Image 1: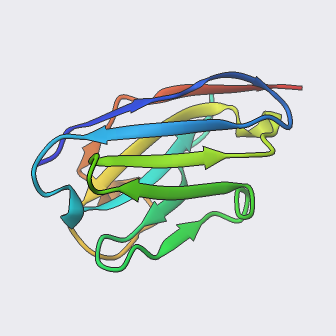
Image 2: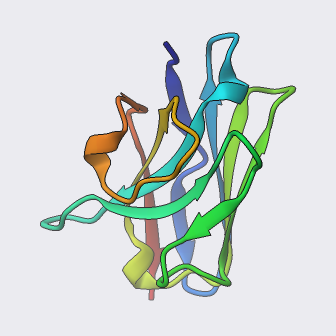
Image 3: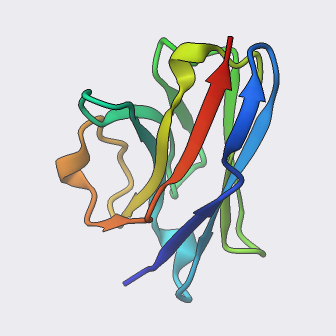
Length: 124
């Protein structure tokens, strides 16, 4: 089992950058595929980015591809999301999630472990 704690959210102007972190507890961090989802008010929680544990392949939604970068530091048990060129439509609560399977799935139901979320607000 793994516990997840996000940090790094905040208020930023359009065009700015933020880096989110997700600290994971547990000795088997390296055996989890990790993802970021986000949820804006009144909308469904949507997939943003993912990284597989078996080979560190990365996956992105079309809306963030080229602007966001997901990475992980095994020595620190931490997942990151570097967000550049932020837009007002990126405003949401961002969640990290994990599962023990190697593949990345794009819907929330596949992930049993979730953090509490961190708010990102992008002003225009």
